[in-house]
Length: 342
View 1 (cartoon, rainbow, N blue to C red):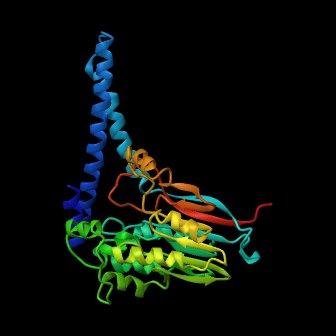
View 2 (view 1 turned 45 degrees about the vertical axis):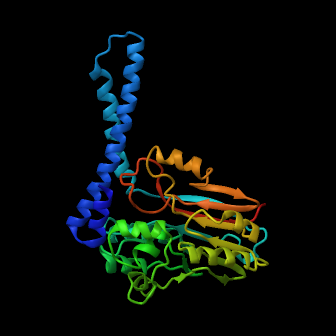
């Protein structure tokens, strides 16, 4: 169901493709919630049977399945609600000029057939209202080569900040904008971590030409005596280059790392990185995926954690991907308030 919906989104464009994509994702989450409701209802009926209580099936069935449907409906509304999460980062080892500055970080917008200019407009207005000194995009900006591409790019070009806009690629940007094709083939290439073409004819090249952003791909830039490094660790070759890049990074100056996935954490901490900003996980966008992801990633699926003195912050993302409706977590932009300890 999801494969069919995604192929419709990748190979076609227009209202019909968007409708098919949305229905495929809605159906998946709906079936998942109804399945869990069925399990819960069976457990309740089992307890009632063990207690030899005379309770009609409809008395338990109606509230359980109504709750499942209400959760899905609430998830649809939640998927359209963009919020702001603020964290305070200690800049004691940073230049004095960074005190009281504000970095806005967003990721995983997944613009394409499902999300387009409307969602981009909401994001841009939200970020503009925060008056950031620096804007960082954590990747997965686009999701597939179709959709209202040019109109979305036009809106994103409005994102500006005094210190500029930095960005890294996400796995969707790297694989899905580099070569058209069915989602099944693209997922296979991603699973095998194949190296993708990055030529001038790709949609990815179009994005880079259109946006006046600095994309960091296993490279760094210095802004006011602070190093900002960005990774592109998606193919086998690029992952080796990313690890080599981290090990050779000069961190005599305070360094902030942008990595789409909350990975390479041990290597980053060992290299002397002060702060790593990541996304990718969507914070576990549906129940019980959020619980499973929290256990698998040891709590690094969302929010702030530490690794050997390095701060890692993982955003739950600013857009909709496969998991629509969103029955767990929330969409967000992250504001990093740069402040020294008093």
